[in-house]
Length: 184
Image (cartoon, rainbow, N blue to C red; front, side, top):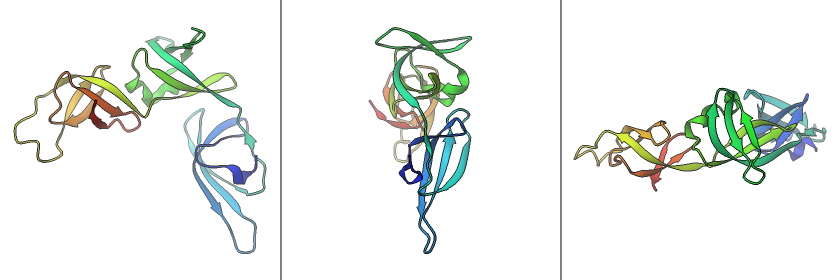
């Protein structure tokens, strides 16, 4: 593909390493040719780098594939996922799962990104539903301002929720930021 075809979210390969474009910039100069500058994330180790090319330079497209897998459990080797169609199990190590582990629920389907048939990252749904296992009771009069308190979700993760949330409530949580979204 041409460098000018890179857009935010697109995946390319540089020196046999897959990168995902985080930020894309097309710079046109008065006399010279156009330049493409991207900020991209290394999908193997998470490092973010900046690169630039002439707009007509060729870039290798990464051979990545996506698949939906269902989270089953965690053991000493890593996180175990299962394909809902073939029932084949895949182990994904802790470094790849990373911060997403806080929101994994048994039976939840996630999207796994593969490079050379090896899992390199997982993508959770943008928001997920959890039950509140524990939180302190809210106090009368605390409802005027946006006051938050600590709460424990059904999977053991700690988040901040508004004071009107109580034990047993079902809430929607943003999995990217870990923020409370709404009651479900």
